[in-house]
Image (cartoon, rainbow, N blue to C red; front, side, top):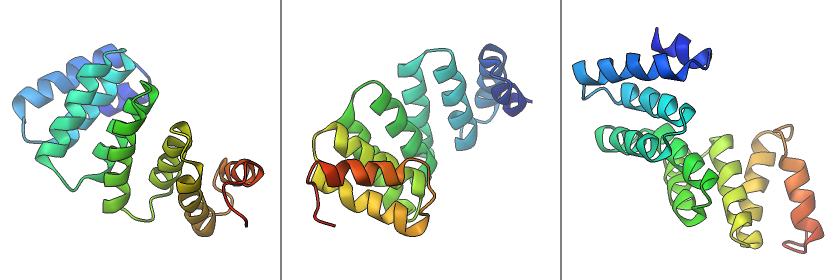
Length: 148
């Protein structure tokens, strides 16, 4: 039920649903993750980050929790923190295109263009049609970040 509510973007009802579920099953990491998404939808960003942290504590090998934390931290302009979480997500899932692409973008936001190149090249290697990767590589090439 809660997942359907999330898909419908009924974040208030989804939150209430997952809040009850987390009370009943506090060790279920996936419930905390879903709770984080509902909280994020409600604009309760710090609480959403806490929910993603709970997932990481319960399931330290759950790449999606690191990724979700990184996304939200990046949206808040906390690029160094986002980078750390994206790096953990990619460490756990080395070929995860979303993680690689967002890590590259996070590095660009920190004016670390040369470091970003490798992540975008990997995304392009695994899926040349990945949205935005060609444009990112062209932009980096135009800025002189690499000679390829």
